[in-house]
Amino acid sequence: MDIALLTVKDERLHVLLVRRANEPEKGRWALPGGVLDPAVDCSLDDTVRRVLRSKTHVDIRYTEQVQVFSGQDRDPRGWSLSVVYYALLPGDKVSAVAGDKAEAIEWMDAMELNRQLAFDHTLLLEAAVAKLRDKVEREALPLHLLPGRFTLTELQRTCEVVLGRPLDKSAFRRRIKEEPALVEIEGEFLRGPQRPAQLYTTAEDFQF
Amino acid sequence: MDIALLTVKDERLHVLLVRRANEPEKGRWALPGGVLDPAVDCSLDDTVRRVLRSKTHVDIRYTEQVQVFSGQDRDPRGWSLSVVYYALLPGDKVSAVAGDKAEAIEWMDAMELNRQLAFDHTLLLEAAVAKLRDKVEREALPLHLLPGRFTLTELQRTCEVVLGRPLDKSAFRRRIKEEPALVEIEGEFLRGPQRPAQLYTTAEDFQF
DNA sequence: TCAATAGTGTCTCTTAGACAATATTGA
DNA sequence: TCAATATTGTCTAAGAGACACTATTGA
Image (tube, rainbow over all chains, first blue to last red; front, side, top):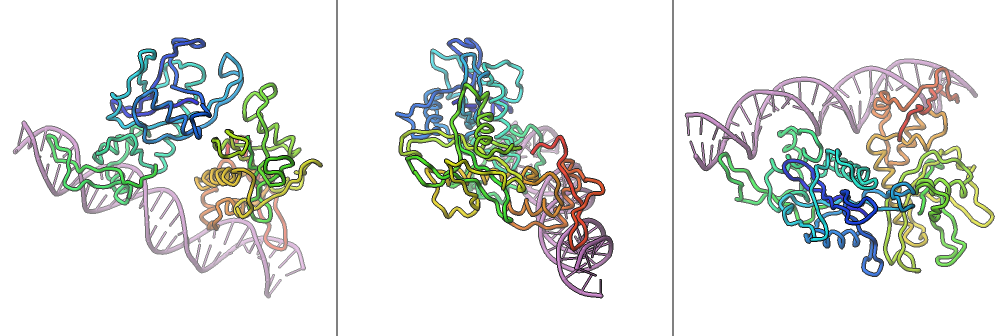
């Protein structure tokens, strides 16, 4: 099981990588992963949460199964099978994710696949990002990438980062006006050297 | 690995079931499945094709991975994991699918989930149908469910069967007019006691 | 001729995109 | 006041749905 933990950092979609401490592919960067432990996990989703907790020490609000990768060529040790998940981390929690002493971690730009990852992890990452993007392209709001309170502009930026293209402000706001997933925090604004921006939060029953 | 082999029969979406010959759940209907054989299969997709060939003796044109189901409660024998696929069979090939002597088979209406299937197979089937429907809902044409040559009306009926709702003829044709996946078979018509209908076929490079 | 289905045309209404205009703050 | 960003309004063009119309065959 491998996980693409995605977040928005510096206006770009980033993914968490860990450096492999052992052979094969020692020293190369890879998606964090883990193995199913039937004694502990009630299902694969449990495995994902357990692994994420141990690697990040942060509570992850959302995970989704992407695809199974399998075959004899993806790992030099022979036939292997891996279920890929993506997970979403709010942008303000990035700094809370720290590697263990044993493991070096790094946030890599998830759109720029210039670095060579271990095994077939570049493919896995592409599939994960594609699935997320597809969902957002179909009108889903990636609220799990945002902090507890956010402005509409921040929400729009997040969508743009995931989609990799600019959105029209007017059309975007028109669309989400009807969105029950968003709740206006009455009287709360983000202030700066300009007109204050209304703060919103995610509805209780929001399902991504 | 379990497979929902889907086809259109009698203007309804149907799924192939096999009756379990062994315990547990002996005698109950289930989706056909198989186990991965690393010695033979280069990947899970190979497994699916191998299993389908052995069960149906028909060449299946299209398969797609749906989702992994896992947990300790889905099989009385304990923790289990299954990758679910759906596969599409052209409507004119239904009669070519025959069970072995050892196995009873049956086509069940895939929308009417009234029968109690073995294990959690009702859930697996629902997930498979939902994935197919979702794809067709987003403008994909389920050409793999159709024979080699077909009319636009037949194509529309097939979409309607998958979606479970009627489509407007005019709007439907307007949409697929631009569709490169469809190739008109010039001069070939389906004739009957009415105006002949132009026959179409699937483009070589069609990707569902 | 009629029945039956194939195929087209037209109207309306909704919506997305582009872009402009207005609003409200701190400095 | 100005700079900067928030928020709203307007115009237009494309597309979807509804529905009616025409076309072409066999009987």
